[in-house]
Length: 380
Image (tube, rainbow, N blue to C red; front, side, top):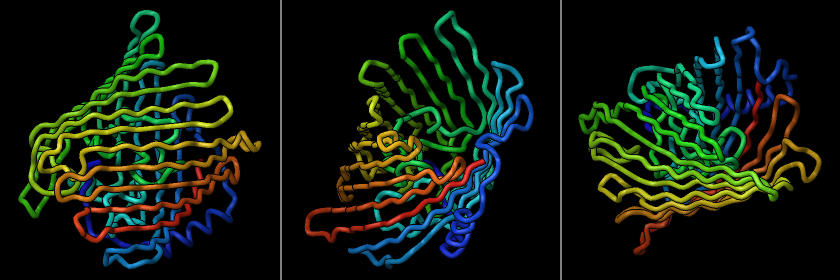
C-alpha cells in the first residue's frame, strides 16, 4: 500500500497501559451501533505489543507497541444506495518504523500511516465513498463505488489470511505484497456478481507518489482486475481468485526512488472443510524492473477453527511465506503462527510469533528476526 512516512514516535508504554485497561474494563455496546434505521457505526480498539530479537542488523532487541482506534460509519438510505466513512488514529508504530527486514511485521494502519496519508496532508480519514447497486437480470448484480477507497477491500481476498486485526499480523499473510495494492486514494471500483459462483472486480485508483529526496511529487494511475470463483460442495467450500494489475509510468514502489510502470499477477485460494479446518495459498509475480525488490511470492497455511473444541470464535493459524529477491536483493522466508481466544462477545486476545530471514546469498550476512506479539481487540 502506498503511504508516506513521517517522524515516528514509540508508544510501548501507552500500548501497555491501554491494553491493560481494555483487558480489565468491561466492554459495553454491540458490534454494530445502530444510530438509526439506516445508519450504524463500528468502533474497534486495538492494542499490540511486540518483543523483537534480531541478528545481522544494528536494530536493537526490545519491545515496541501501538494502539489503534478505528471508527467506521455507514448510511444506507435505500436498498441500492450506501455511503461509508472510515477514520483511524494510532499511537506508535510497533517495529514497522525500525524494521530491518523486507516485510512489515504488523500490517495495520499505524501512527505513520494515518498521518499525512499518501503525501496528501490528510490525517486520520482513510476512506469516504458512495456505492450504488444495479440489478442485472435475475441472477447478477453490479455495484459501483466511488470516492476515497481501499483496493484491498475489492482485490486479493482470502478467508484465512486477510485480516491483520484478527488473523496473521505480518503483511505477507494479509495481502499479496507483489500486487502493490494502493489504499485511501481517489478511485472507482466495480463489482460484478454472477450466477454459479463467478465474480469479477476491477479497481482504478489515482495515487500520489511523494519522495522529497528525488524531487518526486506526482500522481500515478493503478488498475487491478480480478476474476473469482466460489463453490460449495459436500466437503466444504472453495474459493479461487486471479488478480492482475498494471500502472502508469509515474508509479513508485514503497521502497526505492524514481518512477516506472509496474505490472503483476496474483492468485489467492482458500478451502474450508466442514470440520472447521481450513487451507489457504497465494502466488504472486511481478515484472522485475529496476524498482522491484522481489519478483516471485508464495505463501501457504492452515487454519484450525475453535468449533473443534467447542469455542467457535477461537482460531489457530500457521503459515509459511517466501519472496524471491531480484538481483542485489535478499530472498525472504517467513513463518508465522497465531492463536486467538474470544474473551467476551466484544473482545478477543491473540498471541503471535514470527520467524523472518532475509538472505542475500553470496557470503552476505543474513538478517534474521524473531518477534513475539500480543494483540487485544475490543469492538462495539
